[in-house]
Length: 231
Image 1 (tube, rainbow, N blue to C red):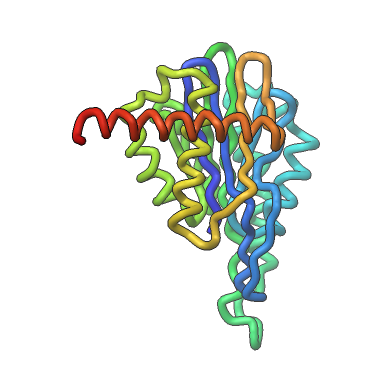
Image 2 (image 1 turned 180 degrees about the vertical axis):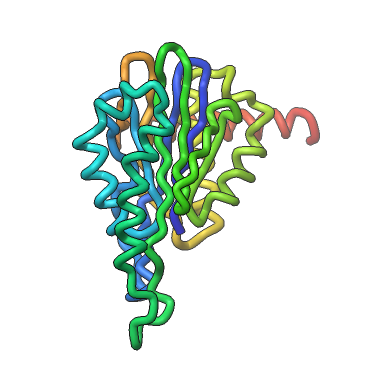
């Protein structure tokens, strides 16, 4: 199971992901980074065929400036991703003897950033469609997306779009930790990236641990409040 999620905050955008890759054909899982830079001002994550995402990463690294400077970032992302998807679809052999259920070349791509004082979150689906989610404020891709959306809904009363990036990082990490408890194929290490007017910053392990301390304090405060009201 894979999950990559993004949430809008008052002063930026936070992306988060797990690190577990599932190879259905070989019946194995292994860790890999799922969040990547998109130039210095944005970031992206992907879910699906690793061969497709490898080509997307190389393409984004080469064309990040053109994408981020484009009048329509969604169209710019689509123009880069669509030929890659088409190539892999055209060369895919679906029926390989002894390899039934080995997967498909489909992949989802989600990118996010902050431009001209406004957030943007764009998804490119396996069919090449563009989805814009900054106005919604939360989005997730991957096989764990449905559970992530549900977890995000359970946090909606905190009004994430009105809160700081620090709180956004804690909320995203809390969602990832909740998914870790409910699925054996979602697990640490988790990746976080915060994006504001100064650009994208991928958090180090030490910084993620500091976010985790915020989560623990948040949970402790909730327990205290519940005990005060109901006990």
